[in-house]
Image (cartoon, rainbow, N blue to C red; front, side):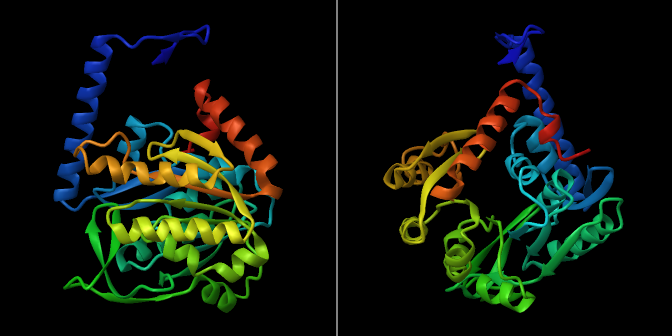
Length: 325
């Protein structure tokens, strides 16, 4: 769907759909060639150039799905300086850059275990620190979790995930997030973001002291490929309930809000839906859900932010969501 100048929805024509599909194919072909030639990608955040790994598909994906990876910068805009935001699975610092551009007064803890990604995270953070709205960030190279040990990071292009027992590559021992924050002398945080491709439940479990004392907003990816991950996320939702988290906002993997509920069982069903769907067809409707876990005290604030996000996205007012300055 597109919109007319009056703001009313108009149906995209068949020709427009063909052109859009062709454009996506061309973009992906160019990205594939650049990756094969080991040419790094770049993006701009509030006037600062950010370096990405060869084949990093963020910008191509956002061209096809305009809301992809947009909510966190939007949420960051509504936080109050000097709130502390923890970014676990910071990758090259692209999401960090977006949140910093949206709210330069925030303080960040960015955690990334992979050597290649961490080197770019350091480089990009230095550029943001030198910008007019200097970045304040603590960078930590570590795998985060309670129970992951001897894991190898496996993947390519813009993402890697921990695989226990995989051969080759550097192995990592995990540290708890509570331990990392205690070492940094950070006693309170406002937002915990985790994106570690299927082990996010373990990241959250490793922060129970911080969750109990700070009750931050918790935003995490719920990718499920195996039974143990499905069981892990279910147990983590139950644990969060014991710490006064009882309101859930779920987004599809394209960045659109799907459900707001105080029913944890309903949230669990939607989190497990992509996993169940893959058992029926190799072409799932969505691939995973992003979840925002909220306490009752933060529910009015989060509802207001999500209302505004849906309104701006629905009205195609994407400037507040843009990361590329």
